[in-house]
Image (tube, rainbow, N blue to C red; front, side):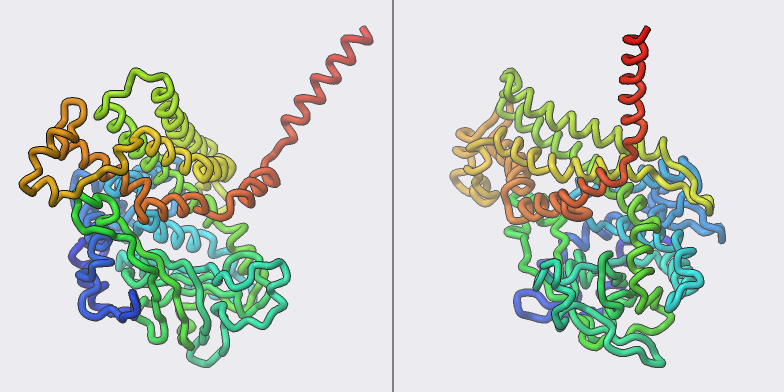
Length: 483
C-alpha cells in the first residue's frame, strides 16, 4: 500500500478503537459515525480520495525511491521545484477545507519528513536512535499513516521557576525497561486526537528535567493512552446553518498516558535534554512546518477575502470608501503572505546534506504577521455584515409556511432571502460561532506566542547590512564635509 483512499482511512481509524472520551462518555462503535467526529473525518477522507484522482495526482503524489506513488506531504525537498511541489500540494488540500483544518494530514506528514531529514543530529548522541526514526519514516510512507501530535504541558504552573516544583501532571518517563520506556502523565493539545493512526509525542524546547526529554510515535490505540476531548463546537449538523463547523471542526484533546509502554523500536531519543532542545532548534522542523503553515494561511486569507467581498456584493455596499478600505486590508494581507511564501522558496538554500531549506526569516515574518492580522480580518467581516450577522433564521424557517415571507423580507441585492442568509450563516460560522472563535484563538497562537515569535525575528535577523549602510552614509557625509 502507498497512498490511502478515504474509505481505507475511515475503516482503519474505526478499526483502531482508540480510547476517546467526550461529554463524560467513552466513544463506542465506529468513531466516524459519532456526531462530534463525523464531519471532520468525512472531510479528511475526501482529502485522501483526492490523491487517487488524475486531476490532482501531479501535485498530491510523487514517486519514491522504490518507484511507488506516495503522498507529496512526505517529500523531503532537494530542489526549489520540490518546494514548489510541496506548496501546490498543501494548497490543493487547503482549498478543499478553506484552510480551516490546521491539522490536515499534510501538517504532521511534513513534521515527520522534517524529523527524518534531521536524523544526523541524533547520530552518536546518548540515548538516541536515528535508525528508528529513519525506519519509521519509511514505514509511515508505505502505509500513508495519519498523525496527531502532542508536546505542550498542561497549564498548571507557567512561572519561570516551575521546574523546581514536584511534577505530577506532565508526561514523563517513569521507567526504563527491557521492553521500552514507560510514560505517565498528560500532555495537550492533540488536535484530531483519537482519529488518526498514530500520535507523535515529543518534548517542547526549554525543558529542565531529563525525564521529559523524549520523542516517539505510537499507535493511537496503545494501551493506557486516553484522549479526553473538549466539548464539541458543532452547534448544528446542517450544512446550511453551520456550513463550516459541521465539516471542519477538528476537535482537540488532552492526552493522558497511564503507564504507557513505548517499545524501544518506536523511541527516537530519551533522557537527553541537549538533544531535545537542539533537535527542535537546529533541525528542519521549523522551516518545513512554517512553509506548510504559511501555504495554508494564504488559502485561508483568500477564502476570507471571498467571504468579505461576497457580503459587500450581496448587500450592495461597494461604493463606500470605508468598505473599500476594509476589503483592501485583507487584499494587502493576502498579497503579503503570498510574497513572503514565494520569497522563502526563492531564498531557499541547500544544507550540507543536500536538503533544500526554505528561508526561515520570510516564514517567521509571515506567520507572526498572520497572528496579528487574522483577528482583524475576522473583525472586518463582522463590520461589513453588521446586523445581518445576527438576524439569521435557520433552514427550517425557510422551509416552513413563512418561508416565502422570509425570502422576500430578508432578500439581498438581486438574491432572495434564503440565499442571502446562507452566505451570512457561513460568515457567522467563520467569525462568531464557537467554531469561529476557536479558529481566531488558534491562529493567534499558531507556532507559539506572538511576542516570543517577534523576539525570535529580532534576535535572528541579520541587521548588519542595514547598520553598515547607515555607517557608510555617515562616513560619506563626513568625507564630503572635509573636502
